[in-house]
Length: 411
Image 1 (tube, rainbow, N blue to C red):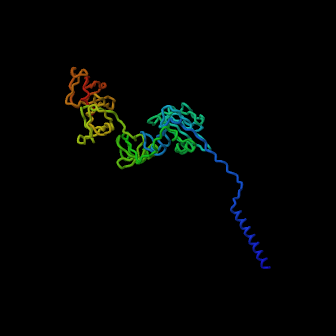
Image 2: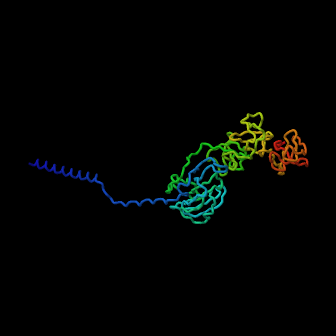
Image 3: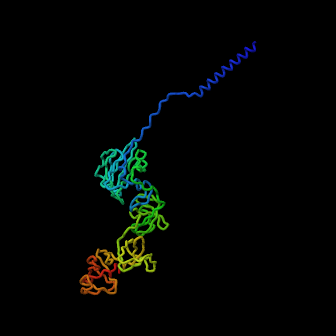
């Protein structure tokens, strides 16, 4: 009897332990709901405005390193270019105060506005406008989206476009940032509003040409020593973005140095125009009749001078179509039907007789009376422009007309 009572007691105690265990397990797996105050929603960034209306522009030159698009331009683009029709409205990206408006070297006509948006100070710069201070004046407050200027092509520019820069911290004292990314973070995606977006790519190398005879220096300034002098229209290479201030780091025949940006051009620079006088003329690879003939030039062919002055006395470097070379200066002319006649230091214009003898006549015709007979290498002074192949000249106190084809610029 006592054994049965002890067994029942043990059973009841075990049952109570299982109840406690199951209760604890239930509490452990049951989620506890505690009321916690939710954080306030993040405040959205203030939406800015696009500088141009939708479908009025194309995105062309982007922020970052680049090759110089025109002579004297930058190698690191601090802004974004928008190709647009001349006169297109330009609008402020945010409310602010105009700090600059009017003319400026390089940019032509510009407007600069200081802003503070969501506690962030920045400046927006709008360049190449038609008239920078026509719509707004320095010191004026403007609203977001206000018409502040008109697209133009002033300053260093090849066609109408808006150049937009964004300076975090303020223009000049802060840092220029990518306008596309800056505006996209603030609700304005300019890539989806454009007519077209040109590919955003950076070339591996840039090709330039010297615009004139120039000093090639060891550093970015006239205080650095000169490596050598480089003639006009000779090929240079450079890395995109290679430069310091107004100086460009370039390479010529394996030697790297510095040239001022005003003398670096992405294309050949013309130093004048000349025309072929004879029925044909050889364009040679060098300044000598022994050099290889690159092409035979026809009579009256238009040539672009690539260099001032001469080599070996009578040779000039020229460009014809896509070919460069050398021609004898005796056989090219300033005018289509005249000789190459050049002024001396006094401003007077002289030429020299090319054939063994040349008749000076009273009029512009071989049928008119002869005034005198000129001999080879005698100098005449030009008294007028070439007309119908004849030019009025003076020699030894006598005045008359000679066929300009038989005159040359050098003795």
